[in-house]
Image (cartoon, rainbow, N blue to C red; front, top):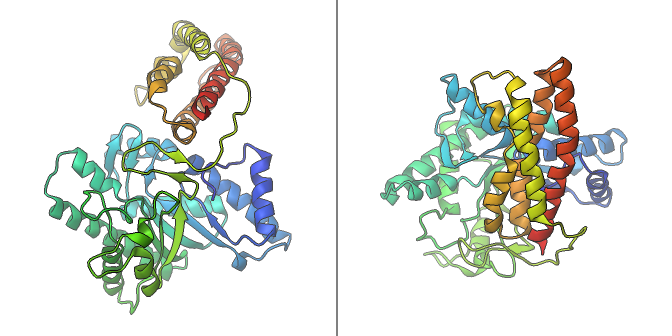
Length: 391
């Protein structure tokens, strides 16, 4: 599992290398894990071991997932909208969390995924939590559940049709779905159904003139608290694992050491959390970051050219306000790491890389001086919030 690994820490590469050398032969990553950097790490490590003939490419099954529109993907989607070329069927679930399984988006994401992984063919490509469409429909007040479900499975069949075409092109071998709601109560508005997924896959295969679909993998939660995959039975008396076995669908588990005992509840960790580092006076750290950000807005931001597109330079650094706002709502370490890796890190890194290209002379020197003072204080604040979340 490569949820929170990238090239920033040598231990990540060492752990993945050891796993592959020791016979681990399934790698599970996603296009949005660490804003694509997880896939890049997988490609780097696996490519090195293959070149050194320590493993064979055909000995490893690489699974990746497509669906989330966050980080760089979100900026690209916003840019397309501004240019009048939006991705069709975009689901805008919340601020900074968009989702899309339309073939146009899948095509761009598969190109980027194969490039980062350094692969000609992805073994398994999964739609990543497509139930966001159903959740957003409920939040948006679209009450006709039957119509929403019909549209949901139409979109799935459209995505599967694209996957079937890419199997014919040799770019993927198998496909499937990663869903957190496929094991839940089927009366829930956002619940998904493996039977209906397989029916959609069959429709996609027939549309391609194929005798058999290539839907082969389902990923779902299972842990000590979430046992519905083998305890909840459908109208035919089957539980999910029986249905998957009869349909020759492989099952991958997520959340083995985390659990959500009830829908909408905080994540319960089933593993001990180590409190790394020392506690930080977060209120003092917030004051320091806020003071430096005020200085940036007054002295540095006015000197940065404004393209009038996207975020204005004066708003590049408002982390003291934002982190103070979300601090009371952090549910634990898992939640904090999602926020840090999917929201904070991509935005901060992008701005830190962009500003030096926009400044020169004394303005560039002023920026460098401010940045060298600011970054350590921001990192201290982030470490403090991580420690607090772990505690």
